[in-house]
Amino acid sequence: MTSAMIAQTVMGARAFADLGLGEKELQKHTVLDVLPFRLERVLAGASPLAAKGRTLLVVVYQQHEGQQAQYYTLPLGEEAAAM
Image (tube, rainbow, N blue to C red; front, side, top):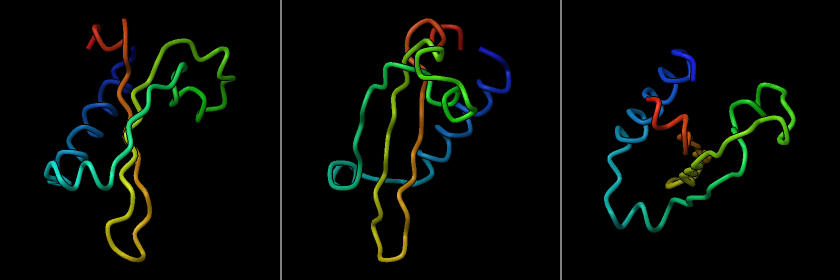
């Protein structure tokens, strides 16, 4: 995992924490899924088959009219251990 990827993961974790969601809001407005590929690599143009690894995807859906869903990712497996 590159230092840029680590920095992006840390910033994403801070942004998610800054939402300040309590347990009730988390249960009502979030969905978690484990993707069988590295999402940031696919978004950068790689094939899902070439983007080896796994990603925890957390999607926070709108809480107010006009808000859009936001997503946060976290690497799983060996790359997470390297952090």
